[in-house]
Length: 106
Image 1 (cartoon, helix red, strand yellow):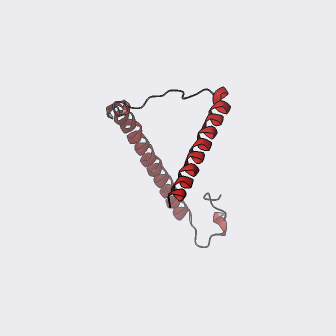
Image 2 (cartoon, helix red, strand yellow):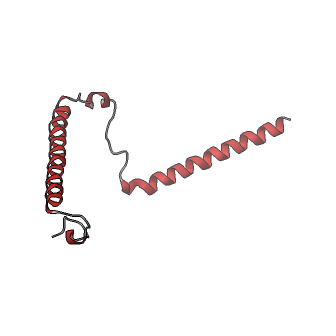
Image 3 (tube, helix red, strand yellow):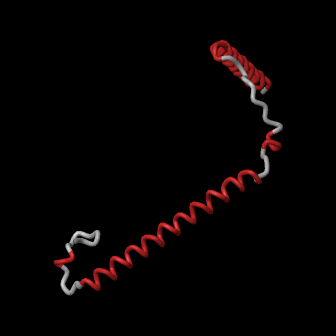
């Protein structure tokens, strides 16, 4: 009979029935204490969690300024990109005209 280990008790030098009984009793006691501790901790978190969630202040009031709205439809994407490209071209053209005019003033 092994005590949940790899080595059978018959191979352990000096092992007697009294030692085996004490080891078995100690193993059972420690195992029950560990399971009891884990169970009590689980109960504590299981009770504290819902109470905390219920009593936690509502954060929706701080999000009043947030507006969820679709800015544009995906089918308008190409049209918007073309408009942005055209604006950039006009900006670059205007900037180059200003540079040329400032060079002429010199």
